[in-house]
Length: 195
Length: 251
Image (cartoon, rainbow over all chains, first blue to last red; front, top):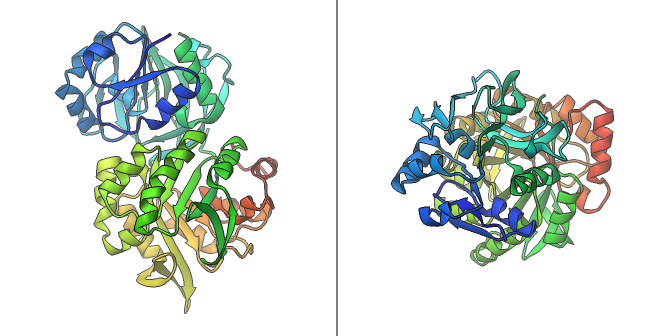
C-alpha cells in the first residue's frame, strides 16, 4: 500500500485533496513532521493563501530545506506549485528554488483573481494520461508562472499565457486545483499516484 | 482560452433541508442537501453555493456537519454563506471543505471584515453577497436576508467591497428572487462595468434564455439559480448544451 502524504503547514485547505485521494482508495497522512514526510511514496504540497506567510511557516518547520531534497514524486498545487519556484512577487519572497523561474502578478488590465474554469492545453506527459488535450480545470490565483522550459501544460488569462503544469525530475506542479476540477482533475491526481 | 461562464446551483438551507421561497419569503422544502449537491456536481455544475438562511446559533453548529457532508460528495468549488461574522467562522468552514465563504450582513455592519478575511485567506476566498432591490429609482442594499434596508446603494457598495478586498460579488435582485421573470440584466451589466472582479448574477432565472441574456447583455461571469434547478424545470446539462449552441463559453 502506497504511503500518500500531504504537507500540512497551515496554508490552506487540505480537506478536498485528502478527500479525493481517499475516494480513490488510498490512505492519506497530513503532516508537517519531516520524518514522516521522508518516508512517503508520494508527497502532495498544497497551498492557498499568501506566498510570504506560507514560506515563513515552511521555514519554521525546516521544510524549506527538506522539500527540495525529497526524492519521491512531489506534486505542488496552486500556491504549492508557485513556492517550488525561485521567487514570488507576492510579498517579494524567495521560494524553494526547485524550478529556476519567477512567479509574477497578473497586470490589473483584466479581471483578477483569475478564478473559474479555464481550458488547459496539455502536452503529452505522465500526468496528462487520459485527459483531453484541451481540458477544463478550475483556477483561483492572482500570480502566475510564465511559460518556461519546464512547462508541460499551458493556459491563458486575459491573453497572458502562463504555466498550468510544470515538471522537473521528481517535482510536478499544477496551478489549477485538480481536487476541484471534477473528473479531469481526479484523473490527474490518479496519474500522479500511479507514477 | 478564456474563463468559462459558470452555472451555479444554490442550496438555501434551513433546518437541514434545502428550501426555496419567493422574494425571500414563503419558504417551501425543495429537497435533501446531499442528494441535490451530488446531483449538481455529477451533472456538470461549475460550482455550488450553500446558504444557511436560518443562521441561528443552533444551526451554526449543525451547519459545519452539513458542509462537511456536502464537501465529501462533490468535486467542484464550494461556497458557504449565512451568518459568517468572524475569522474563526471562516477557518472552521474551510477546515470542513468549503473553498470560499460569502459575507453579507456582517460585512455591511463591519466592512473591515472583508479586508481581514481577504488578508488571512486570500481574496479568492471572499465572496461579497449583496442583496438589493429597486426603491424609488435606485438599487437599495438590504441586510438580514433581505429584511432591513442597509442605507447603501448597490453600485457604490459593490465598488467598496472590491476595494476592501472581496474576490467576487454575488448580486441577488430581491425583487426577482423566485419569480422566474429573468435576471435583473441591466443592473448586472452596470455592475460588471463598475467592478473589476467577477460578478455572479442571482435572482429571477426561469428559463434557458434568461441565462443567455445575463451572459450576453448582462456580461455576468456566472449565473446562480436555486428553485428552477431543484424543481427540474431546467437541468444543468441541457442548459449547458443550449448555451454552447448559442456560442457562450461553457465548460
